[in-house]
Structure formats: structure tokens, C-alpha cells
Amino acid sequence: MNNKIASMIVCMGISIMSVSHSVWADGTETLGPPSIAIATGTGVSSAGTGMITQPGSISVDVPTGAAIRQVLLYWEGFSATNVPGDATIVIGDGVTSTEVVGTLIGGPTYFFDPAFASTYRADITGLGFVSDGISTLTVSGLAYTFASNGAGVLVIFDDGSSDAGIDLRDGSDLAFINFGGSLQSTVPQTYSFAPSASDRIGNVNFFFASIAGTLSTGSFRPSVIEITVSGPVGSTTTTFDNVLDSVDGEEWDSFTTSVVIPAGATSATVQAISRDDLGTGLLPASLDWVAAAFSIEEETPPGVPGRMTGGGSVFRIDGTRVTRGFEIHCDLRAPNNIEVNWPGGNKFHLTSLDSAVCTDSPAIDQLPRFAPFDTFQGAGTGLFNHEPGATIEFVFVDAGEPGRDDTASIQVWNSDGDLVLDVAGNIKKGNIQAHKDNKSTL
Image (cartoon, rainbow, N blue to C red; front, side, top):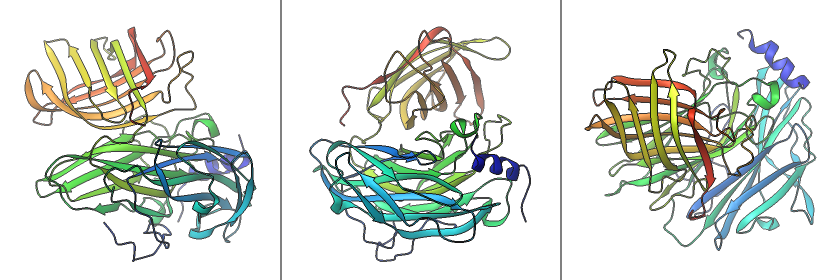
């Protein structure tokens, strides 16, 4: 365990006393529109790395044939005193490397003793290090005086499809549930857009730092991300529980999630929260929200190129057997099928997969089968006992062969909002398998 994490654990056991890009701000204790012009494009790709151990490696995947419009490099860390952190970082493509000077876009902000958080951003488009396909970058030379948490690359591209209406917010927004004032919660970010006569897909690319999780402490830390889509006919909130865990290396998370934007909707509000919604009893994560890019996909979203299949059963604490089978796609592309059956003649049938986030946990070894992810968290609507209006939320985990360590969590509500199924546990007499999806549009 590094000294930064040890200090954080001691501290956290107690309490302490569509926007126009012409409006440039950045953000401290709230994300804001960037203080530089942001390119237009048809999509966004992002990836990152923890920087507690250096050099770090970032592999960012851009659709083949797409033109690169803008490449932004972010980094974040903690200073031991109330001064900005390291404004320089070294980035390379394996052949050449160069020192980059960034712009301070958030902080320094006191988080815990003795950590002051600050975030930097640099436009590195002109370096030419990122092209279509997979580009692997190395980052090093980051020297915050307390902890160099991580770095990420956000790429805006144009693949010839419709404009994605990209809206980026960045800065430094810190949160921990046991702290007070502005440090207890992040500020929700609302993205506005013109309505459409048909459903669309909304994509959000996130960067988070300072998620002290499995890699840092050996213990998972709960968190919540909420996305609320609103319009004239009302609003719908999708909740993603426990998807942050220093997935990109110690102290850094970057991932993309997708939600359905129904016809007529005009805004989406996104918030990251330090909270334990699932009642694990574990200490919720502290976090520094660094960036969130919202974009709209008129057709197939550029999500994680993967799918998950499974069958078998999970067991409630009382031993009740719940069978289920499924095939679901990380990018929401059809087919998406989930069938859940449990005693009393009860049955849920998925008719629409409405949101999905696929992540690769550093705590899970899914070998020998290779896939770009191991955990699928999603939500959808369907039929409960043949009646429409039912909803489902689930988390499926492929922990490798032969499947005895695979887990599933399933909750089903009927059309009246009554919880009719709540089950979680290891798979029995079955298997969950994550796959690289050769049919993906990536």
C-alpha cells in the first residue's frame, strides 16, 4: 500500500470541517466548458492510465478510416501543499517523445491532509501521436509532490457519419460522502440538445482520478453514476453502481457508457456520487471528476466492442432458484435478449436494452477466454408475466472458466414500480462468458 493511500484511509475515517463553447470557463469544484475551442466531430474515444507507477501506457481506439479532429491530454494529482501540481508531462508514441506543458483547469483544492488536487489539460493534436485504429502512448515524468494520480487522452474524430453535437466539461470536482460542504458531492452537469423525432443513443466519456479501490488498497469502494434524460414527456434516470475501481491502473478510471435518448428528449444530466446504493457496507469511494464528454449517436454507438452470453442460475439467500439466459451487446446493438424465470410462474422478458456499461476490472482474471471486458452493468424494459412496463437492472460478471466464480445481480420491477425480484450471488450450474464482438462497428 502506498503512503498516499495509507494517509487517505486515516483521513477518511473522520469528517472534516448544451452550453455554447464561446462561454469558456473550466472548473474548480465543478466541471465547466473548456477554456479552449473544442472541435466538432462524429464521435469521441478516450482511454487513460494510473500514474502512481510510471511510465503509464494509454491505448486509445479510433474507428478505422476516421479523421482525427482533436486530441486532448489530461492529468491530475495531489500536491502536499496549497500550490498547483506538475504542469509538465512527457508523452510519446514509442518512437519519439516530447515534454508537454499543460494549462491548469481545476484547483488547487484541499481534499484531505496533506492533499491538494489540481488538474491540467493540453491540446496535443499537432503532435500526430494519435491516428485511426489503436494508438499506444506512453506517459511519464509526472511529479506531483504527494501523488501523481493519472492521465487520460480524449480524441474527437470524424468518421463521415452525422455530427455528434459534442459537449465537453472538464476541471476538478472532488467528492467524498463523509466530508462537508462542496467536497461532499459533485455538481451535476446538464447537457442540452435539440429534440428528435426518433430515439437516439447518448454516449458519455468519463475521466476520474483518486478512486482508491482494489489496486490501491485491496478493498473495493462503492460509487454511483446517474444519468437523467429529460424532455416534454418527463424524465428517466439510469443508475450505474460501482463501475469505478481504478480500472486503468492505480488511481485512474476512464470509461464510456451509453443510454437511450428517447424521441422528444432535450437534455441529459450526469452526476458522479460517493455513495453505497447497493448496501455493501463498504466505505464509498472518494473521487476527483476530471472530465465528461457528452455526444449523441444517431445510429449505432461506438461502445465497447463486446457482447456477453450466459445461462444457469443464481440463488437468493433463502435458496430460491432463479434461472436466466441472455445475449447482450455493450454498444446496445441488437440482438439483446434476457429471460428471467423464478418460482411462482414468474417471468421477465427483455424488450429493450436501454443502457449499458462494460468494464474490465483489475481484480478479475477471466482467462483463458479473452475479451475486452468482464463486467456488464445495464438496465432495460420488458414484460413481467406478459404485462408491459416492467424494468430490469443487472450486473453480470465473467470471472473466467469454468464459471464457478461468475456472479450475477438482478432486480426486476413491475409496471407499478414494485420490486418483484432481487437476487445476487454466484452462478450455479451455468456460465457467463464475455466475448470480443467481431461484428462490432469499431
